[in-house]
Length: 312
Ligand SMILES: C[S@@+](CC[C@H](N)C(=O)[O-])C[C@H]1O[C@@H](n2cnc3c(N)ncnc32)[C@H](O)[C@@H]1O
Image 1 (cartoon, helix red, strand yellow):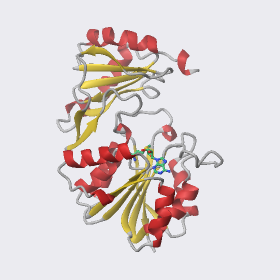
Image 2 (cartoon, rainbow, N blue to C red):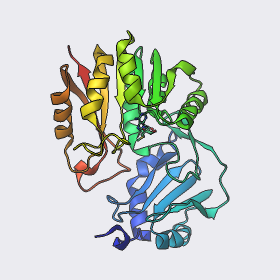
Image 3 (cartoon, rainbow, N blue to C red):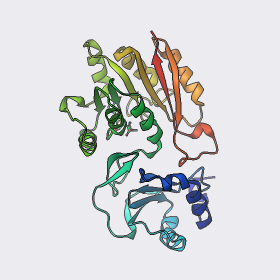
């Protein structure tokens, strides 16, 4: 069914989704998660995210127009509700409540993150990687961590909060790296400008491999299609090129955390491809997925991540 012809999220659908997330609503340490996830909650193309006191909805224009009344009927009153029409330009607009501040701070299991509610694309935090942040936080004590494709640095913030000896963030967007700094500061974590590396990581990784610095944990979260790199490759995440560039920087005994966003392949298949392409023995030590707030009828459609230990 084309997305535009998909059913809208109705009041019944929204209520069922709300009930399914009871444990998240009751968690006093969490105010940022997905309230409605299109595919798994029965209305592909419609999403609703809680971002602190306010919510952000994406979906067809006609649904956004109905949503304020639906929420009022349900007795829900977020401080603000921003809508972004999809398909369409996705220009954010206020649907309900009062205009949000340009930036707000949200809390995920005690960590604070800076959010831009009116951003036209991503507000600055990927909500589907919450469980990865938890794993990283639990496995970073005393380690030197490299966070590749860092964006606003939430995964590296989790490493630093978990007691990492140091965390280096790499991303091509200078603006994203400024937000890494903000996120570290929000959590009263040390910021060293030398650990915020801007530029094409394909170039930086090659340069780093010539030096002596090695890492005890590497986070590798390439976008579904690495810009300008993957078009001619079977895997848009470009692990084929990234692995040989990354593994020389991983110390024996260290871990490599890889994210998989391929909807048509199992996690086991993605892991096997990584192990086959690796020049060192990699053992799977952890498997994770997005949280229960991202339900999918097809398990392969869920974002997944696997941690590998370098066993050489
Ligand atoms: C999907 S986001 C990563 C999300 C991030 N790991 C997080 O958890 O918030 C992809 C990021 O990759 C960066 N990126 C894409 N190609 C890059 C390249 N060749 N070198 C450095 N960064 C790149 C983009 O700027 C973007 O911030």
